[in-house]
Image (tube, rainbow, N blue to C red; front, side, top):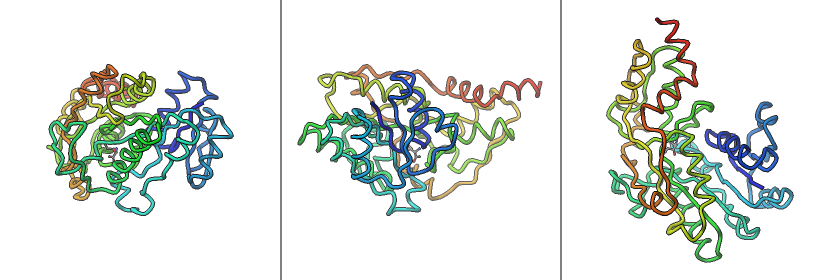
Length: 311
Ligand code: VAH
């Protein structure tokens, strides 16, 4: 059975729905330190644990016969800077080793920093992130790999680009603009962006992200030449995203009100990721490029009805 920590976050909800289709509703358990809203509670087993520590995680694993653990609880880049003490990693590797779990931990482009090669950023290079979020992700990568090589933990990790999803609110990240723009474009026909128009960042549609996560978890161990992989799909700027939205909503307007803290984070992140190892080892390939992303996101937000009304 599968446990997802941080299950109420932007990615946890999508991952639970995706894995429940694959493994059955009752075999995928969400846990979070926030109380699940009713519609989530009805979608399958949820555990509300007010603090995720070694003891209560071990109880959840033992009491529910967990074999796969997806550890998604984290504070994202921008909000983490406002709460450094809370953003420190919860160490779950001991529980995973003791119970022979296959452990997935998501990493991020945020695990790199301004001194990493930026375009493209390879899997193995200098990692000196300047956010506690990035530092905690490098810690998670190193701890997972240490436990793998020292104790045989079946640890797998993907460095995600900024993930764009329609059915969940952004969670305080630097790439959130690329999620919010769709809500605002359909609702108000305009959007105020908190990054500069020329800020190019790696991004990925959530369906590609969730499929990559399951594919690397199901890959035969002997096919993995590494335990932490970059995965890449597209890189775009707010200007390019706005131009693509404009093709669907002609009256759409973007304005800019730069948040200097987020801009400083974004300016230290990769422009694109070199994911050739993932493509070689477990046949990773993305499906969504920018045009498909925008069409899919706007359809989800019902922009077709808006365009129909406009015509
Ligand atoms: C953030 N959305 O912006 C997250 C993610 C790649 C960025 O880690 O912090």
